[in-house]
Image (cartoon, rainbow, N blue to C red; front, side, top):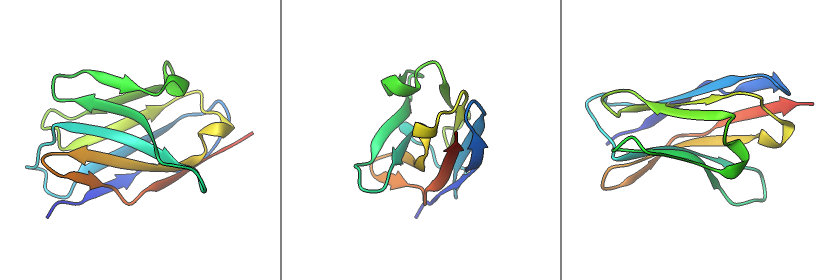
Length: 114
């Protein structure tokens, strides 16, 4: 059984930066796809960014140019660098990883104050 452990959420002022990190509980585990989703209470969870085994990345339109997703070489950990944060980025952010099965992190709160 593999768990995804997230860190890095918190409170930041608009225009600031945060870096979210997520690592598999077993570092020998490698994922084909890793990504970040976010969810606001009362709304559906939505994809923020994803990175694939061939290195390709995918971003939601509203974070392009502000957020950057990356993985370690082993593809057992994923990070999300968030710059120029806006109040509308406030949400719970979830790490996601796929390797024959879909895994989710526990979620980390990001709050951006205006």
